[in-house]
Image 1 (cartoon, rainbow, N blue to C red):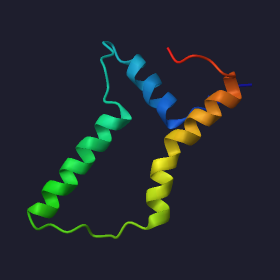
Image 2: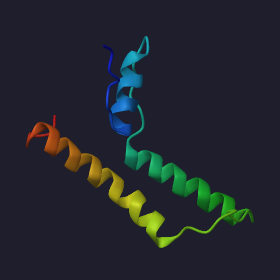
Image 3: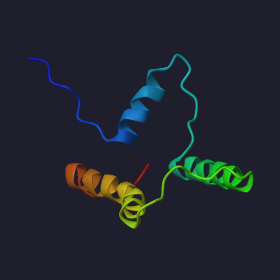
Image 4: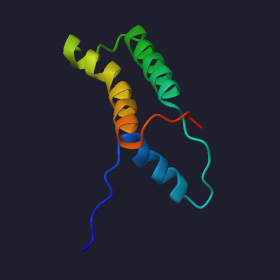
Length: 83
């Protein structure tokens, strides 16, 4: 019987990175957020308005997702000092 790996998004990205012939460093969640904010700011400054409105609940979920990932890691593996 073959079972799929159950991975968080972060773990899946890391697995993809390590599967490359020459695994380099990928952007952190913080780096990606900075690029997203800069691109959005530039687009709005250039007069291109977003085609949607962010709902407060969506913003909350985006902010809480990394916390949920860390909590699930603690539940699965116990408390460990991050490497």
